[in-house]
Image 1: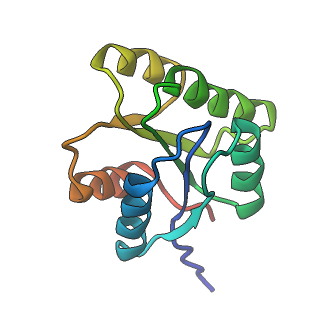
Image 2: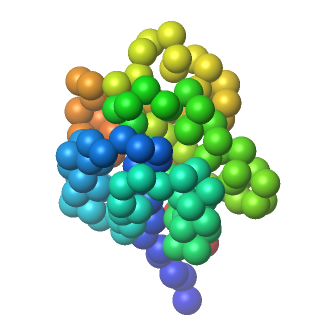
Length: 135
């Protein structure tokens, strides 16, 4: 019997950033696209995000940051995934992220960065094309 598992995505807000409107909009777009969505809530540490992602058996973590701490927080999530042998969970990010930071974030293991102006359709399409549900 073949089991088709839906893509499981966690939308997370690391750090002290209290702006969650964009994260909630992305979470709804993922849900409307047929993905299972877990929303971590505000003020999560990278460790808490990774712990929850492993517990929830997600395929992808989408991080949102508008407070400027993305250069530390996003790579920290990737590092904690490595420490927990959970590198099969992909990480993307979005928010107010300067162009010069994007290359460094991708070099640190963030698969893609979506900045203001990215459409919901483009984000969902990228996820569909680049992330496969675990068996």
